[in-house]
Length: 80
Image (cartoon, rainbow, N blue to C red; front, side, top):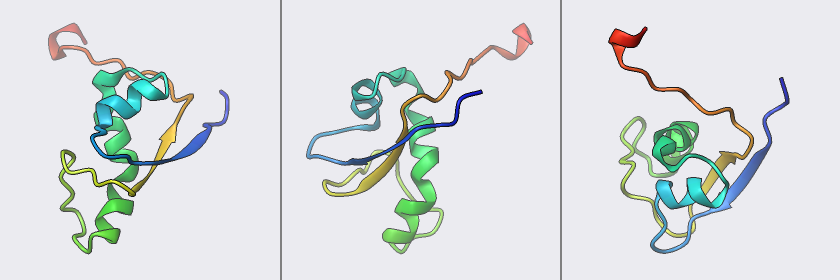
């Protein structure tokens, strides 16, 4: 398995996790994964541990995006 390649992304006005995923060639429906990669970082910066709203990205915030992360397969429980 290849080592994950991390990129630091600086949030611009109007960007969402969805648009950031698209920018780096990731499936935009998997935006929660980008949020999970950064939740601790954003929580500590905002002085609100564990209380980060994923719909509240602010311009200038730094996010880590793994550009070669393998896709996550979502399946219905009945399919497992």
